[in-house]
Length: 144
Figure 1 (spheres, one colour):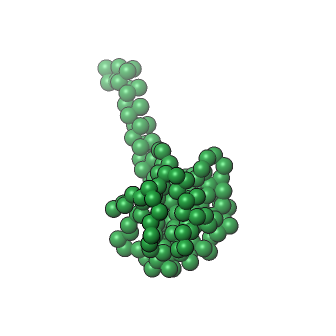
Figure 2: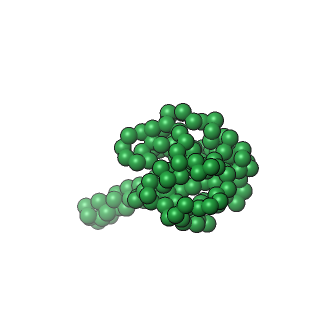
Figure 3: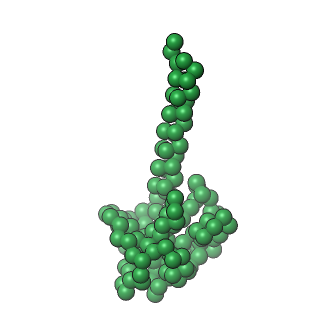
C-alpha cells in the first residue's frame, strides 16, 4: 500500500521506505529522521551516476512528492533499517540493473538485493521479444 504525499509530513517513521515518481521509474530512499533521506543518488536527477548519500527530504523528492512503501514483514526494525542505510553512505557502485536505489532500500529492510522495477522491466522486455518473434514468424507466412 502506498500513501502519496506532495507536502512535507510532520512525522515519518524512521526507517520508512520512501518512493518518489520520476516519470517512467521511481526513485527510492530510506527516511532516517530529522527530515533526512539516505538514497543511492545515481540517476536520481539525470544521467550522472552518484553515490549513496544523505539529502533533505525536499532534495530527495525533487518537487515530485513521495509515497511511503509499506513492508508487511520487514526483517529489521526502523532504527536498524536506518543504521544499515547509514553504513553504506559513500558507496559508489551504482548500476541501473544490478545495484540501484531500490536494491539499496530492499537490502536495508529485508537484507535482500532486489529491484521490483528491474524485475518487471525484464518481464516486459521478454514479453516484447516473444511477441516480436511471433509477429515476424506470422509475417513470413508462419507454418505454411
